Length: 407
Ligand code: PMP
View (spheres, rainbow, N blue to C red):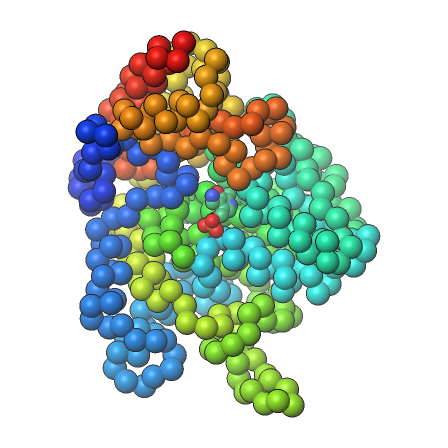
């Protein structure tokens, strides 16, 4: 096994030291939201203690420092995503806002009856519902590419469905329920051949692997800060310049204009054109610290450790009688959905919580995926690089104990 000083890492995450129901916390709900290192918590705190002011409005020192903190987050995201230009990275409140921005500002103005948007059966509702909403307004339809039993996208079908009436193709980089890693480069290549822009939901990829939007070859890439060690209410959308130039603003208000007149208003250039109003400045100061934290550990080490944990957890879970893992893709990030014969997912999650183990139960905002597997809900254990083998052992012990109670 790779040498990875997980205890040193854990010491940076204050919350991991707490107990729940008098048991040490075993936090396995990282796909829902990650915990935050002290450096992120302190960055948010420092913002309000030392430089609280609004951005881009004041020439005074605090205003300049607040603006530098906010724009500093953009610079880090530019590097984090390997975006070609800082003008292509829009700061948002998270993936949901990023995708809705594309839906209302990019897709809606050009959609007409007969058009369609292609998505997949394994998407989070954030990559389905916005398309349905703009579809309802424009007369366009939403098509969903199928997956197989193992939880892998059937790429040939996806490509077959890239027909001329498709105005935008969408896919998640990594499934929040199954952990499946989709072949985004290949999909992007097929989309480019047909002149169809591709939007990638990177919510579950960015916390686990280096993202390079130029190498992926997509048109839009959305991330959410709170799943990648950052504060809630932060996120980003990277989009190709040509799209951002053509897109009308989504929200109107302060910060996004060039000149306002009742006879007609002109808008700021991207990215500011899409950033109306006062943003989550403190949150972005925290997100900067989160990105710096990833850089200090390095994704190579993170990925190696997480893959070890994923394999270990998968093996250990297979020892539990009656347990069925949902999603067995060849390439996965550390997310494991499962069911236990004879037990309701929510009952199990409640009993696991009493043992200090936090997992998620439910549909994980992926109703169509639940429908595909014919289940109302699953349990999901999702790991981060600060998890340990001992925590997985504790999780399996708790699961065996709880199973006895329910049988
Ligand atoms: N897409 C995926 C794949 C997700 O896992 C999530 C969060 N569960 C979202 C989108 C939505 O992210 P947010 O709620 O932070 O906007």
